[in-house]
Image (cartoon, rainbow, N blue to C red; front, side, top):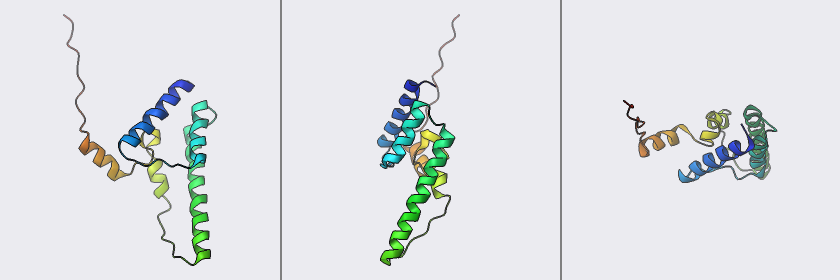
Length: 118
């Protein structure tokens, strides 16, 4: 893929997410990872690995902060962050319920076929 086609793919995916009301991680580190992919410096599996590490670090910091302040910490399954990334750039932040709602609100139309030339 060229830089232009990667940038177009990111723009399309982020635009679709915004239209569907899906929140995109506002962390500049996330956006820097995506920019590294656009430039061809990292592959998507490397981005996924680094983003999951970022999420784990963020969760650990949150737990430490709440532990020091005496607040209770709600625990989530460790694979929760991973499950939202399984769909690649097309499904950034999408959960199963989001996909189902999208399918219900935007039914897929059959492809139009061109008539055969005689």
